[in-house]
Amino acid sequence: MAPTVDPNGRGYRILYRQGETNYCPGCGHANWYIGRHAAECAFCATVLPLGASTHKEPEYALAG
Ligand SMILES: [Zn+2]
Image 1 (cartoon, rainbow, N blue to C red):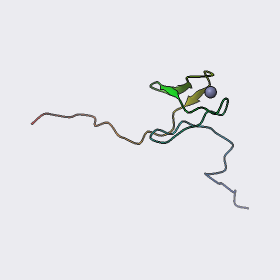
Image 2 (cartoon, helix red, strand yellow):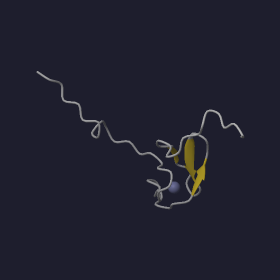
Image 3 (spheres, helix red, strand yellow):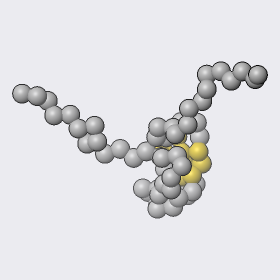
Image 4 (cartoon, protein in one colour):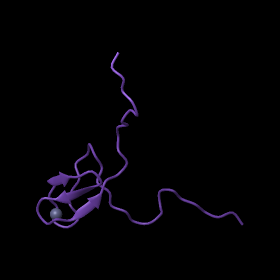
């Protein structure tokens, strides 16, 4: 019996997706204060964890 693992169906999670329009699940607005690890709704203070970042920061950037 193989376990059924569905990476897309592991519960209902709401994440703030950077670079996209995110509507607040609490009030429906789309104005957010973006922090380092979470986004907070400017209207009702709902906090969403940030989704995967779309950019990678270089470990070192040495100027030529
Ligand atoms: Zn809200």
